[in-house]
Image (cartoon, rainbow, N blue to C red; front, side, top):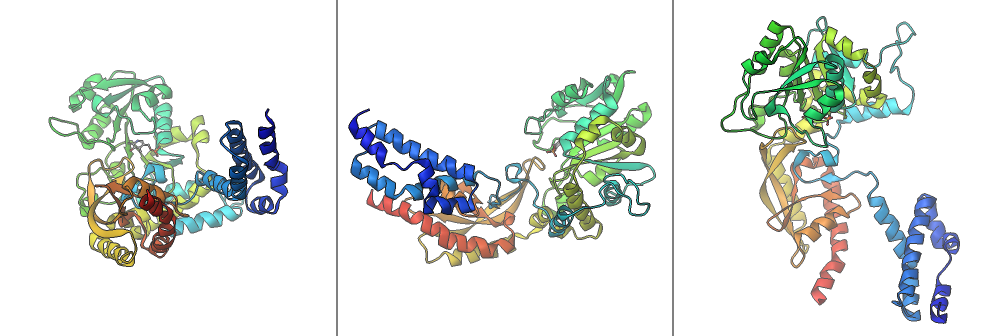
Length: 481
Ligand SMILES: *Cc1c(COP(=O)(O)O)cnc(C)c1O
């Protein structure tokens, strides 16, 4: 090593020195030690590499060292951005799997907090003082919500709809055959492919019909002594139009009854309201499916149902008993926090307070109300360098629920002269509460349908102060370039 390099090396503080310095102590007071060590090491290693590459003189190294603490703090902050944190969803996509799907109602959050803070009667019968069954009261609420007869029907809650489907197939069809239309051999997303799930469950897939057309006779002709289930998978994330045919659920239920083979519908979306009222006609409904004559129906708790992540299963009591006693149920059962959130969500449906469920409230929000809020944003930003205007937008339900369907909405379109929309969107993601936006025609769109009005008092100041402050250096770099 040359003396020059050695001399520059000597100017660098040791990691331990930095950690014990007032700056190091300051960071350690509010961040976990391993993270501070990692950030400090990364910044010092980078400087060491620059010295080896002869990229630094004594003067430039001195300048770098004067910003050492700032660099380490920034490195830490960058690392923290990837930790789980709240974001503002301004995409207009109500159910965004990447953004955690359904936000919970206030009642659900309150109940989760209460239950999380201490003990609860999760599996304890307060009447007898003995053991109770997990989720029993919630299963009852689900049956009531779906208007199913508790004498003939039962319900079961598991971790998600994928688990619900897997458990049902394994418990009812392992070693046997399951008949499914070729038009329903779908991939739901996240690697959930119906043929794979079927194989893993130990059931044999019997495909009938063609991609675009399947008739009830196709099912009837495929029935053998080994047939255990007729499976209907709701095509929740794509649309099929043109020369298509598919038996109705009622026709399938009729065949199921005649042949004495249970019909299982993976409904998926958990929709409980008539979406036609919001301009989205012909949608499958969990409630309707549960009452349709399907022997067993599964849905997600955190899609249109608007509750916590879980899988909801309802069906004939004897079939549900087979699911309940399957060892997989123990592996798929939900925790007390999910039970608490789901209970509050079910009570909202039962008390007719569906508007307290955020997904439904967002869906119902009138375009005019959204337009007025957008205008407030535009007015508030009028005197800034951000060019803002109200534009028409289309929100989507998303989450693999209502493919192709849109809901009219409005958005605040933002533009910053000289700065591309990509860069502006990236700056929005860097805010202390990151904002996720959509880009259209080189403008950044904030669709306020998915931003609760209660966030306006937080989001607007963030845009006006933090964002403008953060983009100031970008603007001056552009201006001088
Ligand atoms: C979304 C969906 C699933 C998967 O649900 P998760 O709760 O995400 O596991 C399964 N089937 C259908 C039809 C769906 O729409």
